Image (tube, rainbow, N blue to C red):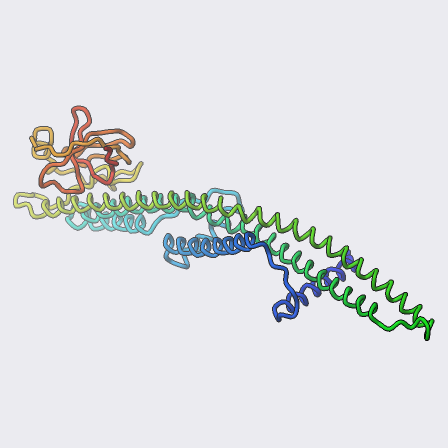
Length: 399
């Protein structure tokens, strides 16, 4: 390998000189050029942004992936797929795995038994919870974690590089100031020396020669100082422009934070709704088991909405019971007092579980109202000639 020895020696000399200047500044033995107050504030703000972004990113990753070993493995897997320029496959969540185990256990114990049919019911809802969790994790990674990570691995590295370069330019500037100061002091000392013209002519010639050399040193130091000042000012301007971009970073992170909060709200709303549905199914299951004239004490099968898209009930051995009696659950023939009719926008698709409920489509508008004694988590919804119960968490009430 071909080394440029002169350049290597020059770089080593510059590094050593900067190290000496930095050490003397820390010891209070050398003057330090102070940065512009506005630039200082920008640097402090940028450092604070970097530190808090790291903490928020790290803690969000811990929240979304509590197991440190799983978190490390997930990051390694993500890194490998990124280097291979391939899409990262969806990871099975713990809830989905639990649901699958329950369904397999139900097949072995017998889905026609009370325990087996309950395992089927709970297992399907666990898989739905896991699917909602997986969607939440994917959304959070795209809308929140990735932008924060891109800032730390991209923009911040550029800012750090320019900050280090600015610090080197400042050290060079202070070195030139110190060099000029020493040269002027030497020149002044030589000018104040006794005049040996009359008594010692030879010494006078030497003194004049030394004075000329000192004057040249001062001129050289002044030139180097001007060059260092220009380079420092240029680098300070570049760094300032980069640091002022932190405001745009804050706006971008604000939007990402709003997206994350929205994804989190959607996820918890879905989980809340799934658990309400599961409780109703388990209540029906208990009623079926305790029915005095029940020939088979089997829990009702989960309704179709409890299955993930493209899936069907395992084994097809669990049938819908005739307990879903439309004559007792139908809302069309029940006259209930109306209070506070309002318009509402549907936020998510919803499949009715029985004849008492109304299926919904995202973004459609319906009329809703409540009745005395009704569960506060539900409203009565009307769409044309159709009406039925609808979950409040799936609606945005309009004025």
